[in-house]
Image 1 (cartoon, rainbow, N blue to C red):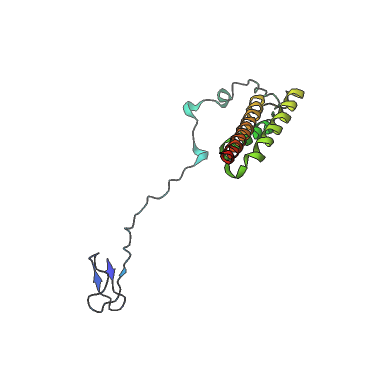
Image 2: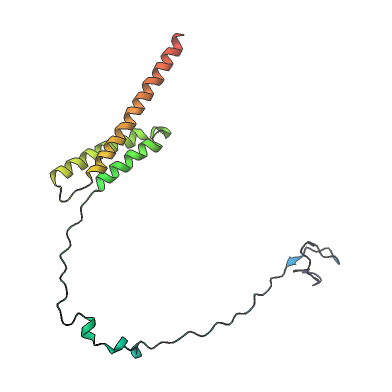
Length: 164
């Protein structure tokens, strides 16, 4: 529904944009949504709840048995360097070709992987992630090898183009 702001004429047709009486631009009239009445909230009384079957509380608590003892938590194992090595290695393969960003990421992946491997070897109870460290070293090394191969092929193409 549309209404003319100047003369107040109301139009039910949606195709009309200007008032037929004075040519004023019509504005939409917001239709009010129907009022919905919601039921009032239910009130509960947790103090008046009854136990099922009127069972005694001791039956729920294990009949007077001692509560199980839990072992103390051990320090978590650290695999941060190994994981970062893998992330940097994968990033060097994926986005390393853009602006030669892999020349920064791949050596970082290899170095962090080697440091992580030495930490794992020295203290295996505290440091884990040997597979992640190996994968980071491999992915970083693969990028470096492919980049060096690319540079060699590119150099040979330039030298071959100058000779002929």
